[in-house]
Length: 179
Image (cartoon, rainbow, N blue to C red):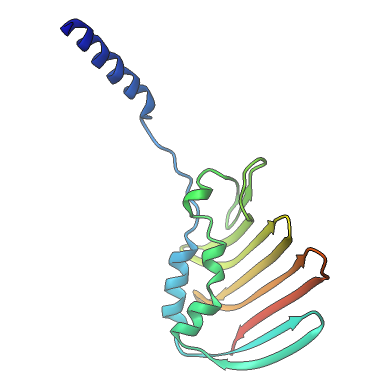
């Protein structure tokens, strides 16, 4: 009976050894959540011009920003962050220094379809992303462009549409430029 116990232990141990890989390869994607925190600090209290266009209606205003307003305005960086657990290994990476592009692989599920970025050293020059969510009752699409100057966000543009079942498509554009 003891021999049977030893054999079972050895078999279980041998099987466990096969499960654990010797190395784990985790793709290196940029962390835009970390970038968000850094930008909130760097941008501080400045004024910006915000232009919003919603289905042909246009509005422009100058807004005095602070850290809480920046956190709200730049929240999209969390949405387009490819460095999330659900996206590990989900992107094809195309590198053409200083430009890099991450494209969601065929068969992968995710609303973040593409991320592109340019860097000089550790500083970003620009970021682009495409977010597309298609459900049974609605489709939501946004294209993002973020531009940097001296390591800080200088402007960003969000262009998209939303289509609800049995309703017209709503087009929108948001453009924010630092003064």
